[in-house]
Length: 180
Image 1 (cartoon, rainbow, N blue to C red):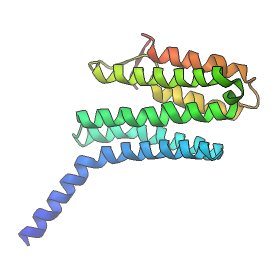
Image 2 (image 1 turned 180 degrees about the vertical axis):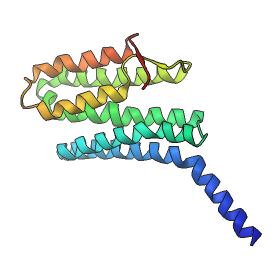
Image 3 (image 1 turned 90 degrees about the vertical axis):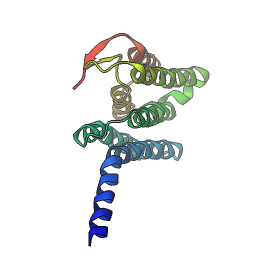
């Protein structure tokens, strides 16, 4: 009987220790699925998957803190997930929807957005927690970019030649925002 109690206790502890990482990996999986959906021109699914990733991203840190399982691994994993789900996935989606016709300029704006998102995440990972974000979080930038999908037939495609670099520069700016 003692053996089973110990086995269950060990299993519960392992599940608890990995719960936040499981949510983060789920976020990353939806980001990857969004990229694949975009490549197959299932743009509506891509949007849905990015929004599901955003929902998961909202809770991975909360779960880690609630369970007392905050770790450097979790922080790094979260950033890797965010570059996929809110950097590459939204950028590729909107590139394929509106910027592809701009050729090299469209590709440059897309890559600029992704690079600035990665820089923003790297800066976040080496900074001390102080209750504020420096620069627009990539999750917010990616969500805004993805939301514009719904108005992509309304906005002139040139709008995106401005939106991509504006979001990119906001991510690497020194703008401070209180964490919510």
